[in-house]
Amino acid sequence: MCNFEELNINKVKHSFDKLKAYCEKENFKGWDPYDGLNSKLFQATPLKHSALFRLIQIQTFKRSPINLRKLFLVKKDYNPKALGLFLTAYSNLYRLEKKEEYLQKLYFFKEQLEELKSEGYSGSCWGYNFDWQARRMFFFPKYTPTVVATTFVAFGLFDAYEATEDQRFFDLAISGAEFIKNDLKRTPKEKGFLFSYSPISGNDAVYNASLLGSKLLARAYFYTRNEEYKELARQSVLACVDAQADDGSWVYGEAPVQNWIDSFHTGYNIEAIHEYQKYTGSHEFDVAIQKGVDFYVKNFFLEDGTPKYYHNKVYPIDIHSPAQFIVTMCKLGLFDEKKDLIDRVLHWTIENMQDTKGYFYYQLKKSFSSKIPYMRWSQAWMMYAMSFYLYYLQKEYNV
Image (cartoon, rainbow, N blue to C red; front, side, top):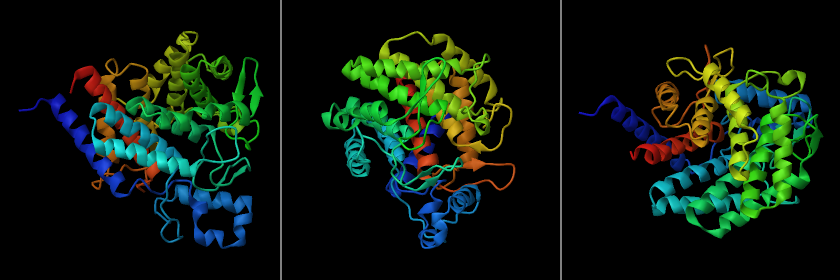
């Protein structure tokens, strides 16, 4: 008879297999919480020219527990960030088992990303497959490159390169550092500066986005030994660490409307600072990382493994929260130390947020939960996270 630990592992593997089958059946195309402006009906009206109505359209689709996309003619599509996450997931699988099916998926994702690359910038870069209206009145046409999408895609390509040793993955990714260096704006701070979210978004000050730029520059430095990449990455980390509160937390950003503290962006920040140090050989920010981890673990999870959204509020329970937690713990080398909590969080998530069809829900709320099967936000993130879990399970426990 299997013991409880073995039953948990089998449960995770079964869950992952169901999720993988769902994503492959959908050919990795899907809807997104923010794709309301892809509606053919909305685009046929003069409302598409109004920033206010664009924002209303996006928020209505995002907040509705009922999927309006078929009715409003929003088609499923490839999202570059999702493809980057899938690249890392299948790279992890390929490192575990050298299966031809995994290798072919890596080349499939690369081909799609070559087609979806944003042109006219200093290096390789990617955006989202939908127009997006920001609350601060910035309008991003589809495929406007962002530091977030570019970093996740480039990391996926680098992961595929390390898994396969195929230079073509590397060549597509490496010039992403030039996009970060040359095309993003910089907001000077008392220490260092913050990278902008995109080339057109102005001097915004969002910590996780800037740190993702540092993360990509640091990995590019690791491969190229370009000292300019290293120093630019450090300046962004300096600004973000200087903004860390004494208790180890970060608010989302510096604007008055960005003063919340949430789980997955906290995880982003900690992971990105760690990745900067990993790829540059630095230990300058060890204390900031430890403070961040302590706050993260103590404030975002209930005893039964429920992943909270905010440090002081549980709902909405968002699928990003458990996914990023697993990744952060794995990347920081804390898989063994935090395995009990990781297991509780992962098993709670499987029990409460995975549909019988294999996909994971977007958000659970006290009422009117959203169980729409978003490909980027939910499925790609959980495949990404669970691939790390399975990889480190093999690495640490040979299971």
